[in-house]
Image 1 (cartoon, one colour):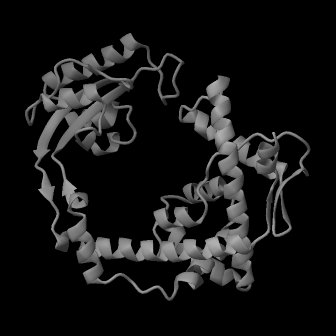
Image 2 (cartoon, rainbow, N blue to C red):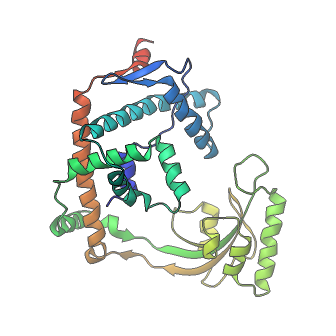
Length: 326
C-alpha cells in the first residue's frame, strides 16, 4: 500500500533538533493556537543529537554552532508541519482501534522486527495512533488520484533513458578488520598492527585452501556483508579508492595477497565476477515505474493540499521572530 520511502516523506522526516533553554512550559511556537513548548524540542534534541554524534557529526566549536543554528530552524519547522498534519488528520473523524491497526499494518510489515518499528516511531516522535491518523489523511486526500498508465511510464522511460542504465559492476567478497584505537565509533576496536595481523592470518588460511565465504562468515567484522559470505557488489565510485583499485586489479577467482588498508581498517578481497554494463528495457522496469509514478502523483497532491492548509493556518514561530529582531 505504501513504501517506507513514501511514508517517510509524509510522516515528517526526523531531522535533528536543537537545544532550547528555559523552563519546560516555554512556548516556542503555536499552530492554530496549539502550543509547541521548549520541552518538546528538548526531547527531540536529547534523542537526535546523540544519534548524529554516533554517525560522526561534531557539534563542538564554531562549526558545531553553525550546524546547530541550521538545524534549529529546520527542526521547529518540521514540528510545526507535524502538528498541522495531526490537526488536519483528526478533523476527518475518529478512528476505531481496528481501523488504526488496519492502516498501520502495511507500514509495520516493512520492518524486520517490532523493535525496529518502534524505534522508527520514536524517531519521528509519533504514536502508533497518530501515525494511523496521518496515513488516513493521506489516503482520503489522494484517493481520487488516478494511477499512472503504461503510456505515462513509457514516456518517462523514453525521456530518462540514463536512469535505467546499469554501469559495469564488480562482484567481490571481502573480509574487514576495523582499526579503531578509541578515536572512532566502530563496533570493534583494534590497533593498526592488530587489524593488519588478523588480515594476514586470513590470507594465510586462504593460501591453505580455506573457503573465502566461510572465512568471511567466521571472521569479518562487517555486519552488512558477513552473513552473505562477504558478498559486495559495487560500481565505480561506490567504494573507497583503495578498495576499488585493489578489487579492479584482480581477476575472477583471485584474492589480494596483502591486506588492503582503507579508512575503515584492513580488508582481504576476492574477485568473484565482473557484471557488464546494461540498459534495462522498458518491460523490465515497467511495473516498478508505474508504481513509482503513481506514488509521486499522490505525494504531489498531498503536498499541494498541505501547502493550502499551511497558508490558511495561523502559525507563530517565536524562534524565527527572535532571529529577525536580533
